Length: 129
Image (tube, one colour):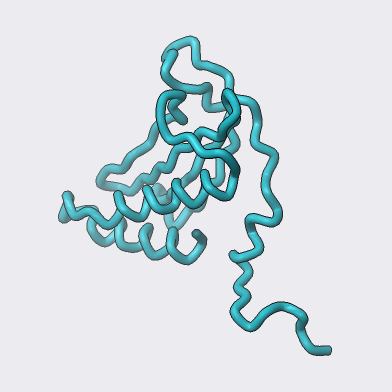
């Protein structure tokens, strides 16, 4: 039976059709500029032990706030979803913005020791983004 999917289809193209339920963010009592980690939806991709990237999302005041984080053995950027930055109108825009931000940060060359892991992370983000 022939496929009804377009020739240019890849499995990740349909990922946004299964939009996750993005929860309402709760302001962290420890840091009023951020949401609690538990109140956000997190998408995490492990590449190797201690090497991963993740995207975080939550609703707040009519928009989706997002964060893009990564970690490898030589550093990374792990943090909460902040209330004052990175806001989008819908999940597709938020996820695209988070992926673009993550690609830009992973492509910067600032640590020779982490360059190999950062390159692996970058390729994985591009493959899954």
